[in-house]
Length: 271
Image 1 (spheres, rainbow, N blue to C red):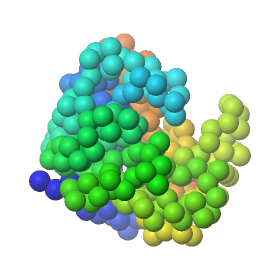
Image 2 (image 1 turned 90 degrees about the horizontal axis):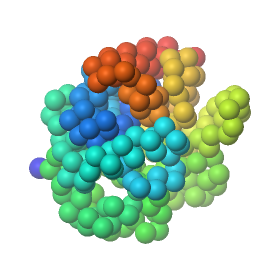
Image 3 (image 1 turned 30 degrees about the horizontal axis):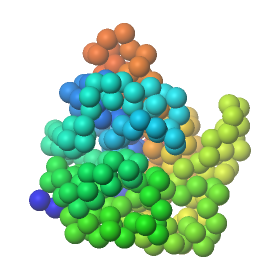
Image 4 (image 1 turned 60 degrees about the vertical axis):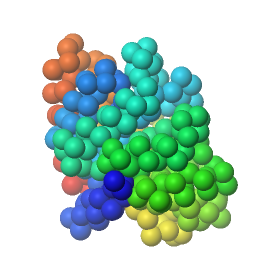
């Protein structure tokens, strides 16, 4: 079975045709449990997410904030394995029909075997993989396996990336470009937004791929702000926090479904 990069591209294109940004949700696999995570991801997609990223929990998630680190820790203490991550992708896609990607640091993929990981992710109906810490220069083996199995390889760019670097990264990627705005201290949202907007502009100058922004968006107003200049709005911590704060599993599902609905309205408003 081939992966679903075509489905991913068609969903992003459909959002653009509707003159709006796509809403991309993120949740680590195995949080709060493997089955609970599948239900939560399904609720996010039912609520209004167009695409979802399933995180592969890592013991040292250096690029993630404390909220996602907490969720990763819960998943790891629950005994999460790569096979559970693949199963989460498979069930979420089968239930909803939506494109589902895996977001992971490189080390677990390297240990599992890049070809095996790509084959298993594609077999599960996955749309691709986001690899935030894999340098483009060291990515050829993965990219060949991903292309062979019909998977997108999504690389991450940041405001610190120079234009020549942006061109190199985006030329190697597929599916979309993940534009990560460097978050400052609390209260610097306006400058962070400006940085992200400039990054999207510079990235679009060197690629035809859609540019999706992960910006710490947590509500409909912020989603609309980012949707005004990006092809996709990526939301992770806000969904995780709704589950962490919920008094029971059913309340958590209702909370993430409601948040997805609010954010989906936001990306359709465009500030």
